[in-house]
Length: 388
Length: 143
Image (cartoon, rainbow over all chains, first blue to last red):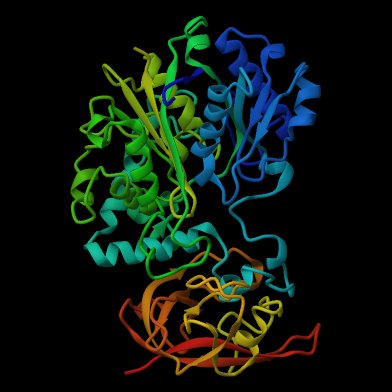
């Protein structure tokens, strides 16, 4: 049944720096969802499913009222983690329309951190004098507080084992910033990054400079998933969901020796290519969620695009930059360059590549890959295809 | 021993899974009573055999740094005068397969490296809210 669902519409709010949205988080969610539905050529009354991921606060019953949805028949959110489940949300929508539980499912992500505080900051029980409870006890007691700290430990081991230099991390940042210069939606458009500026920038947690870490932004993005058959009748060329996969294991949450120095994408890669009936060599353009640059290198390897010992060469010498890149990568600028909407802006960019209207359009795109947040289990990925 | 992250830095909350590790004054890990597998962090079920019967394994505390990073930007005001500090993941010789997070005491954080041999030491402190005496495992580089 793979390939029987497709994205028919995409939408987003304007993207803002953290805390700069003039709208509430709920309002930007509504802007993105309305935009995606209109982009598909549908009415809000046609929407009968809502899916998101992570700790999405904008719950379906509230959205249904505000958007005038007549009958909500399917809601879902994948368990665990953060942006690592971004592509798993597309899997849930695919499953719903393929099984016939719903006909037009909107998948979305909205965040307004001025309103609700920061995701990437140590918060909650890390307050002065408060206790580190539950899983936080094992790491927070030692000042391992943020995703940057955890991903730095994985990255440091990966670099150590495979002789990877700081330049490899720099190349990921340079590519995202370079591609963002073509994209007027991108918050970093007009702010190109040089190798010198990268190396001169402050450290956050070694081996991550500030440019290795995605910014925190406000905004929302949404996509309408329906059956391929239905999508063919709508306004745009459908972006078929060829395959989607998520994977846990072998351990969840804790550091363990078997997965130290990995991005938790080994299983995701195996599952995705099995289902897709094709392989990495068949991908024309890829979006890799950069929470931090280092885990992208690991995810590139685990998804089958490079070997750990060859990944630095794979990403260097501008091989990721522009529409004619050896490996067209994060063509909208990604989390680093476009905006950090917990990666969902990458779903929209992959759909644009299939439609042929990206600001960094690769020629003859048949397959566009999105790999969600690396470094945490479960990881997830979704492969889009041009409908035959 | 004074705490690497300062006397006011947050303490672990003690519960069925954390109390032994953070108070025993030895490196107390969780071991399955049926199959003798050691797992960390502790849980209600043995990850190796599924048993609910879990007890204690005391490690000798001889370890190796498996990964290290240096936190340079304080993400909490209480850590502002504590950066840079090293964060490490340590494996111990008598319980291979697990990683224990920690800090390295008495050492320039920039010099802490993967492969360093380390030995467990304890930061003793009293939780002012509960009165519990904690002995927080930390790591010291050995020559």
